[in-house]
Image (cartoon, rainbow, N blue to C red; front, side, top):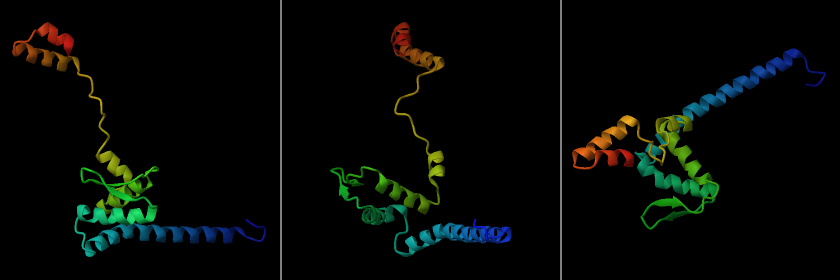
Length: 143
């Protein structure tokens, strides 16, 4: 603040800044709905239908090429930083009406390692093995 500014001018500027910010946030909030409407109007009624075209757009924006793997899966080629994948994910989430946080909460990571069995579960497995003619004691130590 320069010495020639008064408190009133600074407060008025703060209010003006906040009004401009709120207007921008309102436009952003309605932009998601507008995006969805325009994607449908462009002839892409589902996310699955729109995904290839969105990948092409992301590829152009990020400079990351698209390739088709041997399995037929379409992926970004050499996306070292992950920027293309993240951009695609952001657009797809926006079309779904979700945020990253909501998406993460809806589908938490599943551990690649199986959780260890509880004592009750181990006993149930041992009982099943024994019921089918196995050695219960050996089954307990194996589980």
